Image 1 (spheres, rainbow, N blue to C red):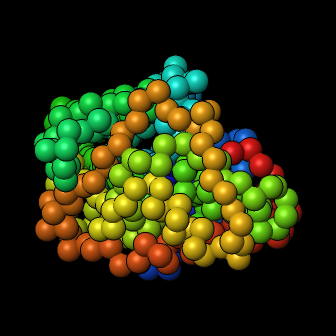
Image 2: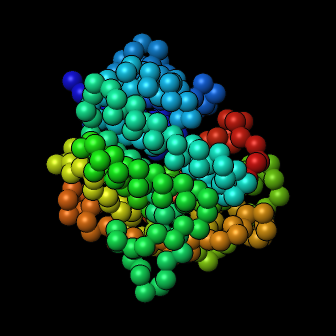
Length: 335
C-alpha cells in the first residue's frame, strides 16, 4: 500500500486532496500540520484520524528543518504533495520576509529532508501562476515558457519554489515535478481571496449581519477559474501518469472572466437584490497580475486531464459553503 505525504493538509487544497485520495485510492495519508493550524477543513476526517484509519497527522513547521526531517521519517512517503505555503498575495505585501522564508526556505527544507532520507518518492512541488505576474496581452494564453514577471512578494517566493523543484530534479535525480496552478477555488477557500470574501460578504448580508454592501478591490483583472476538486484530481494524475523528473506544468480551468463578472455571477445567486458594490482601497494591490489565462495543453496532453466542474457550480458551492458557516455562527467579518 502506498503512502502520500501532504504538506498543508489543513488548507483548502490539501483537505480536498485528502478527500480525493481517501475516496479514489487505497493509499495511506500522512498530513503535515502546524501545531496552531485550525482543523476546520479536515473536521469531517477527525474521527478517522483519531482511529488511525488511513489518515493521520504529523506536526511541524516549514521554517523548522528538524521538524520537517522528522515528519518525512514518520511518513515514509511514496508520494509527496508539497502544498503548504504562505499563500496570500495581499498578505505578502505586509509580510514579505515571512512569505519568502516560509515558501522558499520551507520548500528547500522539504526537499533537503527527502534527499537525505531513505525514501525516493514522486514529489509534486506546487508553485503558482502568480510567477508569471504582469504578462503582456500578446503572451496570453500563458504557456510554460512565458517569462516570469512576479508582481508581489508572494509571486517572487513562488518563483523560488518553482526553481527549487527543478533544481533538485536536475542536480540530485529526484523525481520532482512543479505545477503552476491558475486560479482555483470552491468550498473552504480562504476569505483573503477575492471570490471567497465576496461570497462570505454576500452570505453575511443575507443573514442581516452586515449592511448590503460588498467591498471589493480591482474588478478588471482577467482570471481563468478552475474548481479545487478538479485541481486535486489533476495533482493525483500528475504523480501517477508516467511522472517525468524536472517537468513543469501549467494547470487551470477553461472558463475566463473578469473579477467583476465573477462577482456578478455570485450576486445572481443571492437571495437579496439590494446589494451594492463599493471599492475598498485597502483591497487594491500595489501591482496586480491582471491577465491570468493559461495554456494547459502540455499537462492535458500528458495526463488526459480535463476540468469537469462548471464555473457556475463552483460559485454556487462556494456561496453555499459560506452560508453554512454563517448559519453555524462560525464566521465574523475580517475581509
